[in-house]
Image (cartoon, rainbow, N blue to C red; front, side, top):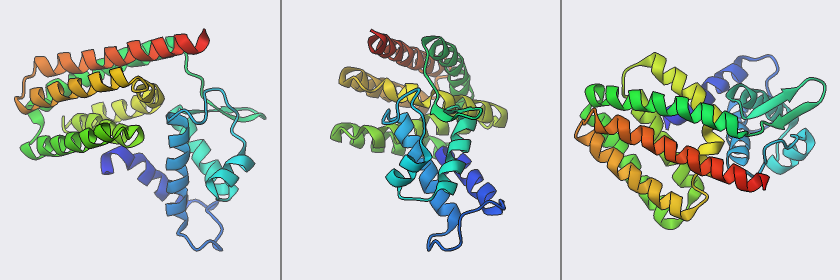
Length: 243
């Protein structure tokens, strides 16, 4: 899944070339271990197991992930660049809090980017691109039917990223990728309700159909509405948490 984890691969290269590295005593290639720790720590944050505002204790995380401190520290730094972690001077790191204001601002911008991506994808996506997105959609449906939210979310994110990538606009892709890293947790929260989850799948069916027909009016509208609906669900969830 190149598109979903391209940044992880970039991180692998950075760590491999870094003088910090990971001790040579380990039997696992350092860059692979670092990528695994990064992915697992990101999942803990995105899926809410490490809640917003929680302090990241390196010793506890090392025990939980069964690794040394170096890959944990590298992962924390990397997740800070994605906006999932906040580094506090002389106080360590915490999971970045989610606020209603931030959710509104980010989802409005993300919806605009996805709408633009939909318009460009209708013109520039190849038949192979559309076939790949369709295959991901069917895989996503399997996870939905099984109630596998984490696996479903991975496919879901890959679909959105692949749609943006097939526009052929590198600047748009890079901008979208950076923003989506910040809002990933909120997008995951939008599926906590089974009713909303089912509705999201129905929306994806319509999105896929509009892409296949290259409807450059309907597809942007569907994508914008899809993100607006997610935003409303997340805001509702945040309101319930604050109550």
